[in-house]
Image 1 (cartoon, rainbow, N blue to C red):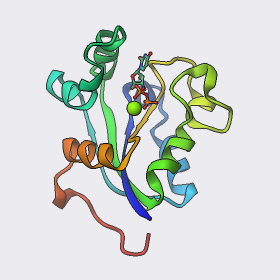
Image 2: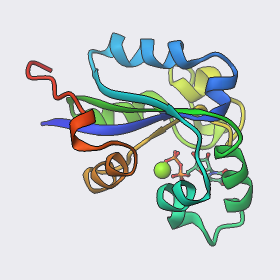
Image 3: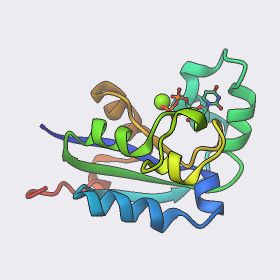
Image 4: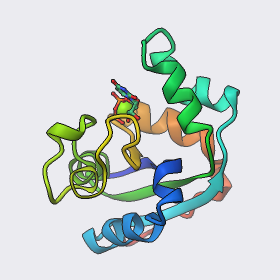
Length: 143
Ligand code: UDP
Ligand code: MG
């Protein structure tokens, strides 16, 4: 099924000059970028995006990190895009992320791990709506 998913290049990825590397991998896979912007998280957006973790020990540090500089937000579209992007990212924990994945190749930390990708269709819908209006998304007819 053709899906849309929200992908973020987090502040560590932007700082380290990895915007192009992440986009290159997404495009090389055959997925399409149908919306994109650069923005900096504030407290409100952090709550909307990561609110499910508000009670976790790691939340304060995650909140500081995600607000620490600009991120790039994208809507990525393609066949099974949600699961494919999650596979390309690799698992959250640095020690679990195998070489070949974005995190396995490019990240050492569990918090500073370069990318975000929605983990389900419901999450994708909710997250895309946090960052983009309908008219900012360019649906690709032949994706
Ligand atoms: N995170 C963290 N410490 C943890 C777990 C998660 O700092 O122990 C951060 C990390 O940046 C992660 C984000 O919180 O990417 C969201 O966590 P989630 O479990 O949703 O991981 P993801 O879906 O990004 O793999
Ligand atoms: Mg997640």
